[in-house]
Length: 193
Image (cartoon, rainbow, N blue to C red; front, side, top):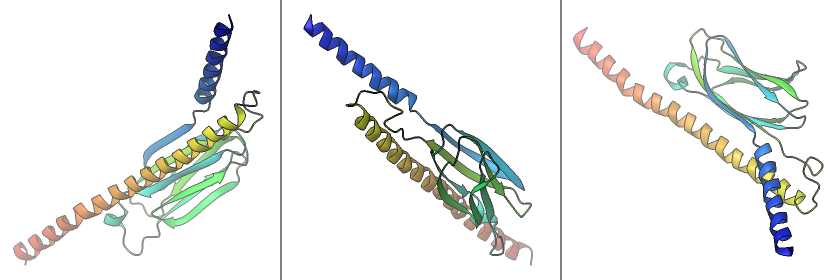
């Protein structure tokens, strides 16, 4: 009888841990956006104080941008309409902030030139629960907090990988186009004097 109760309590603990892990799966968005003038993406943040992080890279910037191109502007607006984060004149960067409130956040890109630009964009909304949000079993609280912290640290590594991959793609486009431009110029010089 005692074995059956011990086994039953272990199963309950595993089910509880499984439910907590399943309920803490966070929202992750990764996409490619073509920005001609203004382009916005919206993401819902469930809890006040959640960590919102991500990155973006203009994929073709080395090919089409001259030294006079001002870059893209990036702005994050809270549900109340306040600007939470802003970057001016960049070809890509990382961002991170704590959400001042829950609700729909707007991530906007502004391209001052009319040339369409492809932007690789990644957003992660993470929530680290405190002891009050978790099950009341005092032995599980510290473990769940550590699991959430490790999940966020792992997400940071994944985010960095996506950022580096997008930058690598941009450099490959640049590397591919340079010889092509050279051959076109040589062809024009020799065949159209």
